[in-house]
Length: 472
Image (cartoon, rainbow, N blue to C red; front, side, top):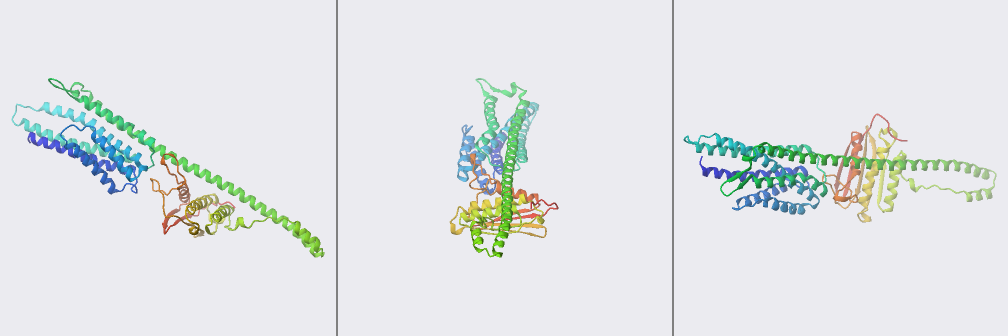
């Protein structure tokens, strides 16, 4: 092997290094962004663009240090602004993470292979024939080893990050900046080290590792600590998002349970009022009967005129067999009436179902609340809601459907979200359907969502339990 061949190998080494980096950019993007936002074709496109930028800068005959990161950051920002501005924090964080894993490899590679190169060049007996050829052969082997080391290091770092990020969450700008701190530190440290590693002097070249042999161990350790710091930040963020999601879910469940509790109290008061009214009516009818039997018609007429009967039949048009579901469905019917929305309900729920009345109330309240929100956004003549529920062969099947404008909003996890539940940092929380799914899981059931011809459909199936949880 000749010196010219080594120079070609070094050029190929630089090109392969850029190709490997481009491929891993796509892999890291895939860890944090849903396929609905960034499919495989878009990932490949971004990786190819970043690779082309790197190859162009590599081909320029003068120093372009720092330009790749700057241009890459601008390109990533523009591309994701066009794809979906809401995931811009994700893309910026992934860009810095991608650079960080490269810098970790760079620091370790520089120290390790510089030491190996010194050992090899010092061990060769240059007085023997073919010594230079053996040197070039060793140099080529080291180039190949560095390529393999880079691929393995980046792949190992990718596997660690993938292990931590098993679920994709929304990300705010604050979170993106927090997670990028270690990446920024890596970037700065690498540039500082690169500036002092090899320093041309008047009569010689200063090599830092020749003067500070201990840095052979310090640099890989520093690289490892930087990566551990980054991983710790990601792990902390993932745990924070999980706890936040759990807290939101618990808050929603508590709110729903309190809502159902108030409905139960209202229903009990309503039934007490009906019983009192029936008792009073029985007494008054006895008096009226006495007047009529004694032919005291004037007294009977006067007595009827003084009677004050207050029985609202409109408030309880639908009977399901359970006071909780009665009040939830009838209240929804009243809201639908106010919205001039056609409302149909064929729902039967009794204590024999083995399904908790509170759980059923939460399911119905969420489904009907989402339906009301959807129909309110469309013209009155298109509004309709239909609810059915029946118990068959140890399973309770709930079907809810409503008209809507045909547009569904989803979060980064692919979950349908309420349009009115928008909070800061662009976060969207549609806890209602998640609560329904949670209760379905509790009863070993399922929830299916579909939409067709501007009709949104939810089908919930619950399996009856052995214990009787229902309220009656």
